[in-house]
Image 1: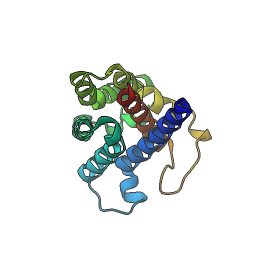
Image 2: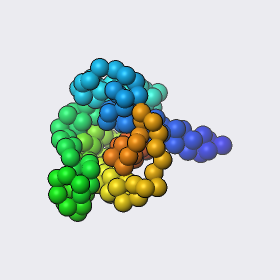
Image 3: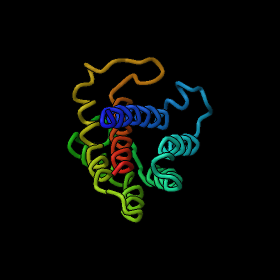
Image 4: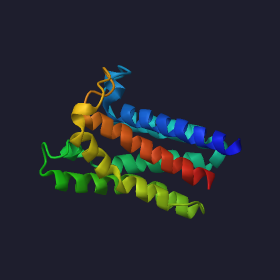
Length: 175
């Protein structure tokens, strides 16, 4: 029973993280109709990621918000999210997004290591960013269109990246 509850909580938190990540990625303006401003969206995403973790992490949840914000600021996503369309080849863009994923999770992994938690699930999540975005571009014709939320492969890549980070954070939090 406890394992089932833990698994349900993990999936719900990962979905929450995916939603927050997409809000950070542009749905801040299109879905919520809030004023433009990436810094505000990143800050809101970081805080929204951390709040559900307070019962598990206590004061470390504040560190999660700060470290996630730092990772989001340091990562310079750019046009590589549009795998192979703007910046270069599919392979180079996938590698670049993998690198940006690692940059994003590095402060979180450092916090986890410092706090005595598992750190490697976060590195794995960041390392999978490029593959998630590439898969979304590869199968773009099969992805659903959700008005004002996710209308293309880049938006679904954001959803997948947020899901990965949230799943890794949850795993770190319970171990």
